Image (cartoon, rainbow, N blue to C red; front, side, top):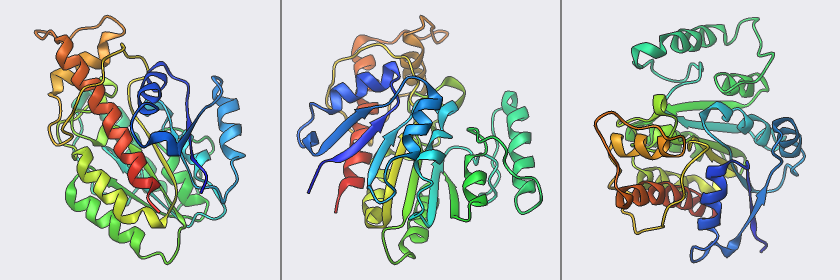
Length: 280
């Protein structure tokens, strides 16, 4: 059995994460492949990956989530599940509250939801309509926001398929206090270990896994032991995400030890997601 290909967008953060993943025990079963810097070239590359190839993809921050669309539009794919902290305008989800300053985006998502099934088709695939675009291609789709009960529902959805015919996309803003762009970091997500268990349960049904959401520029950090059931605090994750740009969380200064913990939390979360997908 050959190595499982893991394609990744060449962000600063992804480069650091991949350099640490490659050193983990057992990760020689993966082949990490750096994609082009130019997004148009990257999207073209993703569409040329043989549809029968089982593979994973690490995209950048939440603004590039729609690259998942091009990675998962295999003719062999019958369904796609989106694990996310927001519905991206797709209707298979209960509406939930978002911060007041995000109301403009939320109204846009509600309007996308109302347009599904009507004459308005996606003309340009973006981070806030990629699941709608997938639906329009005739695929069964489900978006689940970050709660344990909804992870169970997503697993049940996947297990109804008789063969390996699906895709799973994970936006890490659905994980508790993951270092995403500040507006999307949440304290109400699921633990990485809970999501890892879900992926392991449905891996036999999946052709493709893609993950992303990590802020694209980060400072380097030492890899330390992490308990994925013990997330960083919201201030710690935001401070980590802002450190590379010199930004600071008002009233909070992160220590080097906690900086290392947050970075390692991201690495081991991605590691667990990849390993659970790679199971036969």
